[in-house]
Length: 127
Ligand SMILES: [Zn+2]
Image (cartoon, rainbow, N blue to C red; front, side):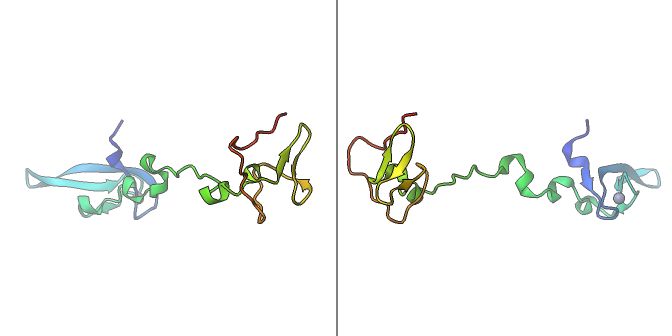
């Protein structure tokens, strides 16, 4: 298994392939290496010109850069959920807003939100 650093996306043919290294001689003396695209044979003028795949891979696909888990409720919205509202009532069959007299979900957001003032904390649906 070749090291990752040999994987390239060829700037010439666009293939995701490997770089082929061949020793470069001046007379009988090895003076360096030549780098070729394993797919199309394009020669890269020097090691700095090799379009290594790791340089081209968008960061979002890197293992170190996974998208953060997004909390769908920001903190300020969380506090405005119906479940934390004093108008929110729960019975075994429904969750209701006492102010608007309509069914609500615990996660609903409401413009008329009023913080529940009891110390008992948010009331969980008892289903
Ligand atoms: Zn190529």
